[in-house]
Length: 241
Length: 150
Image (cartoon, rainbow over all chains, first blue to last red; front, side):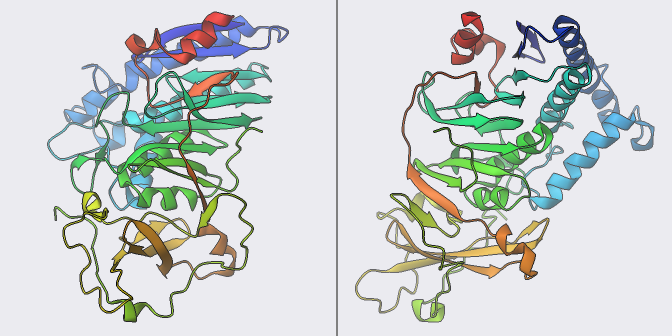
């Protein structure tokens, strides 16, 4: 079974094994959850919890457990990156999108698993969670949209890529307040998309030293292309044969 | 505060002996292994060979001048990590850890990275990972082609 829906402004594709009992119902639950996330945590929706917190209509101790968890994760990455990953940039509103996406899509994958799905591949706008592989996951070439720069074998795990090509210089290094331009692309493989996505974004914000930083994180394998088009990868990065 | 990384130029003599992390496990095939790459200077554009006098106090090293750059200290889960990279022209000639977690178990936390060249590939795949693609951009994407394949 394959399905594609557009939520949060990006396409979400799910591919599940037909023989799995209630694949359609499982997919419904996952997509419902992602629509709920969009309503609750989008900084672009005035009525969302994030917007209300940002406007001071909610106090920090009044937020939902889920938003508290998201903000706690954001703070952990901010500290771990020396401020490069920051969802509260000066002069801008609270924007936890970089954290919410990976966290929410991982939860969607967990919902699929909880519904009994044991073999699926979920791709949310370039962030991939795969279960019951082998799945072959390509990483988009940073300069050629129709090409890949590597292919991975993933059995169970998550793959996230942060790069400049799709939306330009949109990732800000919180330490300088300026767009991060030291890398073309960073891909992180980790058991959880929460970790993979936030680590990829954080490493991208940090620039070249982010490669070492990400590679040093537990359970993270890294593939990065720097501004000089040099490729660095960790020894455990699961490149397909 | 504009230049966030403390850029530290030392003389070459001050670097000796340059200690490379895990020099023993040299099992590289065709690719080069770099103990820790790319803590490039924040003034990255000038690290090229045409860099405007980026070889401070290069001292007397056999003609080629070296640039030594210390990255900022990163607080990892395992403790603070700071690398120092020596550039000879464009090339990284050595890398050493100024700070690393000193617990034995955490030595592996200082990553060994394999360096390769960027290549374009196309292959039969199930999904494409990339920077967040917009719904508008999806139509033309590889992932859309995969989804349409059914």
